Image 1 (cartoon, helix red, strand yellow):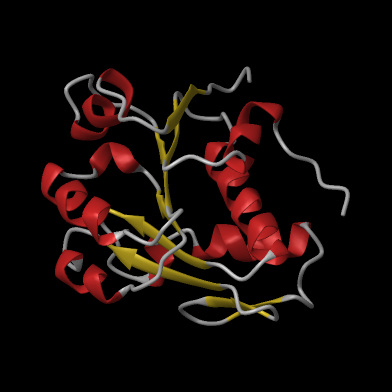
Image 2: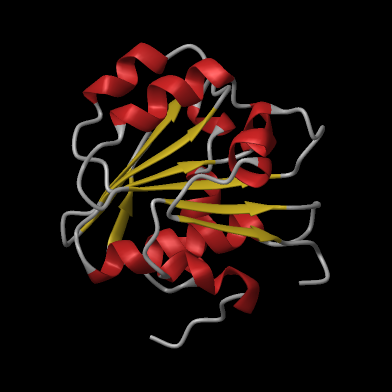
Length: 176
């Protein structure tokens, strides 16, 4: 499979507990995260959870972005795009959930391999404090993409200022 992929986001294919991309708009962070998840999910069965702080409906999620990338990558025969989830022939499952109003339900997402937190600048301290220990499968990863608003934001403080161990943190802007 010959795939166009941004060099600045190649760190997504390296092992780490936290993979963080932050910066301004237009850096292809979301596009690259979606492509990387689909590539990895095509290589082996994964349980992927795509979240954001506020998701009132599937339209608020990255479901459409992933569906578009499946077409762009020519993977329509491999991935089945359902109304509220995406499934692959090898057993990969992609689910979507909002954090703010469903945080207690996240505990039912057992065995998550990768959790992508999109637009993470809005993610609250409470959501992080529940989400991180919930994702406890050996080798599980938390992917974080965001455009920082304020240096005081919880996500910026948690991952950029006070970077936890086993993290890959990259600033990515449109020029990258």
